[in-house]
Image 1 (cartoon, rainbow, N blue to C red):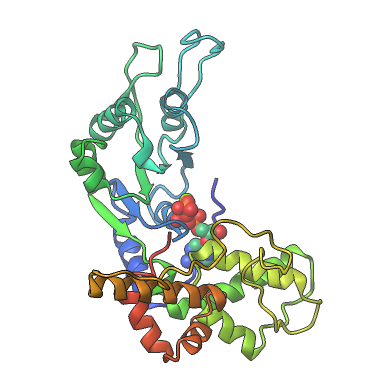
Image 2 (image 1 turned 180 degrees about the horizontal axis):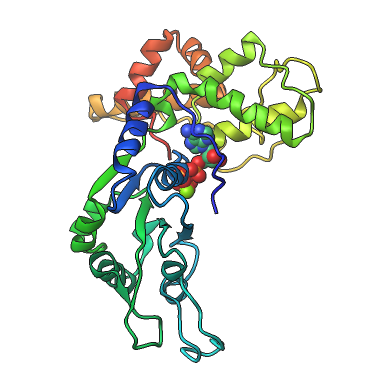
Length: 329
Ligand SMILES: Nc1ncnc2c1ncn2[C@@H]1O[C@H](COP(=O)(O)OP(=O)(O)OP(=O)(O)O)[C@@H](O)[C@H]1O
Ligand SMILES: [Mg+2]
């Protein structure tokens, strides 16, 4: 179960809009779909939806649909009768039964099988289901919150996700902004993670970041919140107790002894170009290559990367946006 006390931090306009939407939709008895890239806080938002709803005293259960096989998922969600399959010695109550009166959070919804999707549709429409291996129709009252980092409408279009289920689930869709659209939240989150790590280490207090460390963090192009969390926690534990944090290690693999791999060698791609070429396309590729190299060399500090290319910070951001290099992989 997700810790109720976990704080949802953010003051950036993009994030405040989401919190506003969460407060509006939380009290409704409707399913909600939470969409967002990796590490955008989908699980945290799902918990918030539950605890701001009228079901807050009820169960908040979670199931990651990608973590187990299709048949196991079916019995984890809907339960099974004794003898339903080899090894099923007792009746098993599924997540839906156990979440009765509360909320069920289905993470990674896009990976569910057609059979599970069909059963989900029925439970959303009528609250009805059968345990695996059972023929008695059971009823439950559960609010569904589902999350995905995939584009469900495209999956539905290509027949990989049921259209009718998407319609039912998507009463409201909350699309979470990635960290790169929440510049002003970086330090807020960084300090929060630093204090958390300080407590975990049983140290007395968090001595704060130096001006340089703050600047480095603010310019850091983190893939997602989890990466920021790792970076911050690492510099807290590596730092001496009670001394201001002045050094931030962004890449834990960084070492003069790092074995040379296939991907960490710069590729001299544009040295020999034979004509004819498509000039615009070639220039575009060249620019992308240089942008990527400068970011790698600057360890994803965008201010340093800009310096390496004799650009201002805002010019660099302009290029990164133009080529969509701000997208996480
Ligand atoms: N607004 C926030 N305030 C504080 N912590 C946050 C916030 N958003 C995310 N986090 C923290 O970042 C981490 C990732 O969040 P979460 O697990 O909710 O993301 P997710 O979108 O479910 O990621 P994934 O797609 O990888 O499952 C967690 O440790 C979470 O506590
Ligand atoms: Mg998650």
